[in-house]
Structure formats: C-alpha cells, structure tokens
Image (tube, rainbow, N blue to C red; front, side):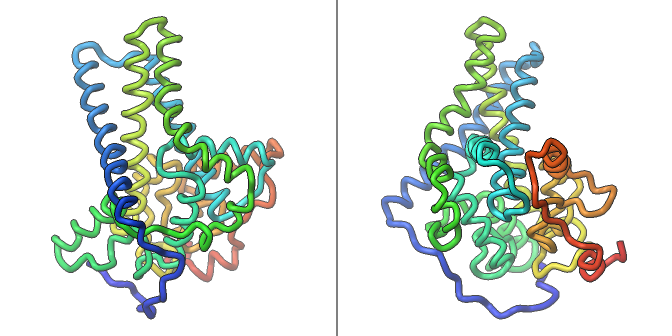
Length: 317
C-alpha cells in the first residue's frame, strides 16, 4: 500500500463510540440485507429481461430514480449539508434531504456526521472507511483495504456520534424530522417505482419490473458507485492537487457519480461546491448547483480562488 507523502501524527479520535452488542447484531443483519437484496434483485431483473429486453418504462424508472436519489446524495447530503458549500431555501433543503434518504445510505444526520469525520481524519486512524489504515502491504493489503473502504466498514461496531459531528443538523427541526422518517423513506424508495411502473403500464408485471429496475437494481448501482468513491478514489487515479491524504481524481467514477469522482479536487478544497476544478472536468452536481443559482434557488456558493488553486496545484493547471 502507498503511504502518505507527508506523515502526520496520529490524532486522538473524537466523537466515536462502540455500539451495544445487540445494536451491532441488528446493524450487521440490516446491512447484510441492504447489500444482498439489491444483488438478488439485479440477478432477478436480468433473468426476467433475458430474451424479453428491458422496456422503456423500466429504463425510465431506473434512470429517473438514480438521478433523483443520486443527486440527493451528491448535491444534498454531501455538498449542501455536510460541507455547507452553498445555501438554499428551506423547502429545497428538505427536498434534497428526502432524496438523499431514499438512496438508502443511512439517515441524513448519520451520513453527514460520518462524512465529516472522514474528512477530519482522512486516510489516518479515525477515518471510518480508509483503504490505507491497518490494511497491510502488497496485493493482499490492497485488496483488504479496498474491501474495507468499499463495504466492510459498514459492519464495524464503531459508531460516529451525531452530537459531536453534526450538532447543526440536530438543531434543525426539519432535518431531525427527515432523519426520523428514514425507515418510511426507505420503504418509499422501493414502493414508489413499483407503483409508478404499475400505473404507467396498468399491469402487475409493470409493478414488479418497476420494483426490480427502479428499486433494487437502481439501489445496487447507486450503492456501489458511492462506495467506490471511498475505495477506488483513494487508490486509483491522479493527484493534481495537494491534499493531506491519498484522495484521487478518477474520471470514470466522476461520470458515474455526478462529479464526485473528482475526489482529489474535493479533498484539496472540501468547502468548494464544484469538485471538477479544471475546465474539462465535467461535474454534473456542479451544473445542478449552478442552474439553481441562475434560478435563484442557491446562493452564497463557495469556490476556491485563483490564488488558492495555484497554491495547491501539482501540475500548474
């Protein structure tokens, strides 16, 4: 495994606790379900569509819910709520919190708290999902680290303390309400594409394939794209910007992840609403934020200055 270019002293990790044994068992069971069921759904959807093809309604539900819930994570959970890269009216804030919750990657406050902890200790002890901490050397260490950063960390008994990492959201009644509604939003994430599929085709078969493609397959794809930012984008890619970790820019993950794959740029400038910092680095989430600004739905947008970019550039770009 690679080591950090500039070694830093190991921090004293704050805001972390061990969940009670019963809670750990329930957590691991629920994570196993949320990892395994979308995979089963993918196999079922492929089997169902073999020889039949995939209908326009199913593709539309897959794409529509992927974009809606994916942007809920990238624009909402990540850039708006975690890093406060811009401001929006409260109803827009709630809409993005709902959309991100329907991506089924955890409740809004827990997601934000965990990601803030990741940035505080990125690729050092305390990072909840680094592929570089305690992974070992060589190919075995590489694979072990990638597995942990991608999925293994979800089974850890460690729990990020919301009060330590997201006190601002805990003081926001709207975010607390969305957070409490997470189980219902999880259910809605599967029920909505099934209902729409049934209504648009006026058939039970349409409801079933809507559930498979717009629900399970979409969650499978979105989960693994998001988890790949934690794993692949800390191992494979380029480092055009100076950052205190092993974050990488990966154009493939940037395309699939609405711009999140420009991960080195993000870690160099965490507060920036734009992650693709060079003109050719297409960043869908930034396009959405910029469009919202034109529509006067986003304001106080944070971007690095030209001087800041020059200071952190490794390539002169």
